[in-house]
Amino acid sequence: MANPASAAALLMLLALASTSSAQLSTGFYSSSCPGVYTTVKSVVQAAIAKEKRMGASIGCDASLLLDDTASFQGEKMATPNNGSVRGFEVIDAIKSAVEKVCPGVVSCADILTIAARDSVVTLGGPNWDVKVGRRDSTTASFSGANNNIPPPTSGLANLTSLFAAQGLSQKDMVALSGAHTIGLSRCTNFRAHIYNETNIDGAFARTRQSGCPSASGTGDNNLAPLDLQTPTVFENNYYKNLISKKGLLHSDQELFNGGSTDTQVQSYVSSQSTFFADFVTGMIKMGDITPLTGSNGEIRKNCRRIN
Image (cartoon, rainbow, N blue to C red; front, side, top):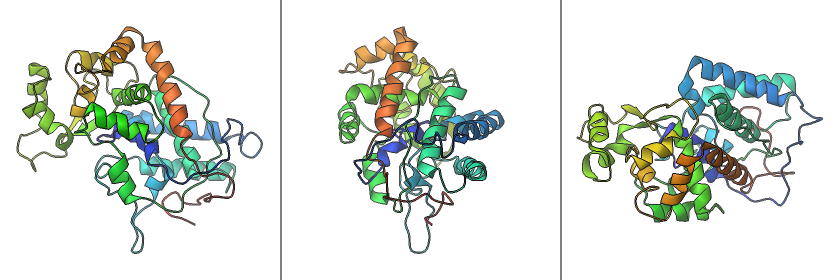
């Protein structure tokens, strides 16, 4: 999620491709693999217990999982993903555990969707029933990843249009951006905002400058939390930071900068439950974006490569 940082891996579902008319359902595995949910949850909880940040790193489209080969270019090295998206080894562990319970049944795409929900819940966020029945892509789109994922330099109009292109409203965009209440971002993604822009709290900017040198190429991979106070807890502090002009990324602060989304941000500050409800709505809508179902795609044996 929108993917200048690991938290926004939740938003990587925006990179989905290939349409199908078949419907997803919450009961898709009720007879074929009823143990999938407890299996995924146990691995997710163990991974987060080991490293809290991992909860912000899990959850993206399965096309992203494909490794580059001599004859295949995946999406991992696309600009929004390179150095940001992580947690692939956790997905491998989940896939391995699920295969032991019901081999060849559950797609990597569904595993990611369930794991994203479990990560949010484990870190204190809302719960929801995940619709499943996706199949895995046999292709990836390097150009799609580069062109469809909002960069951290995005203004409000660009953020709105990129989400609209995926059938998501501006309201969905603001709610899903709340995924930035968890996770970290790299210095290269917020350097311009903390040194060159005025819509930022001065003390906050100086604090971030201490760990992010002004010269490009120095400290590019140094990390800072997207949510100043509680980067491993899923709540509404992200929006409180925006009102205080303490958004880490340019694209974050754009949501509260005298524009059409200011009122929505204020509503989430006033009511965390409103944010949670809208976030769930956005996540369900995002999960419905053009999944592969039926006889399309495949059930990958190994999430990193096509069968």
